[in-house]
Image 1 (tube, helix red, strand yellow):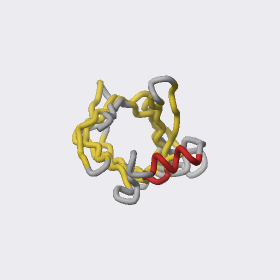
Image 2 (image 1 turned 120 degrees about the horizontal axis):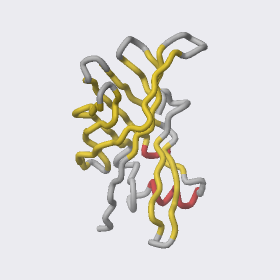
Image 3 (image 1 turned 135 degrees about the horizontal axis):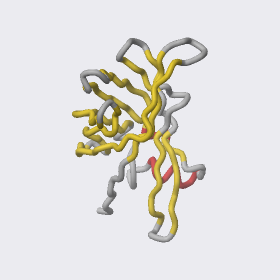
Image 4 (image 1 turned 135 degrees about the vertical axis):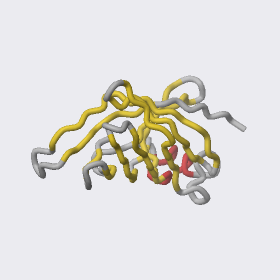
Length: 151
């Protein structure tokens, strides 16, 4: 998930280069892959003090599995109920470092109005200077697993 720098320690999620993808068991027979196409948020990072924050919002209605009928069902009350819960959010509580490298983020995921603790594993985490605008940019991949239980 790339971010574009706005200040020395503040980064805005770059919506053109950021997405949330997922895979899920489909009737315990196959794996369905998809993504949420619209994500926004801010990351604040102080690598020296090893502190910061992550605040991300995902547009639940932007779910995309490249199958219109399935996406319609996923937006329905059967799954994400986007009319009632239009967004999914993640707010960090602690950034986890190994030496000087960001390796994890502990925080809270709010999905369908329910908030649960979720830890993200970060790998890789890299920053450099954007050759076009000469601003610092950072990129990473964050992964986790969440269990969905059928009611």
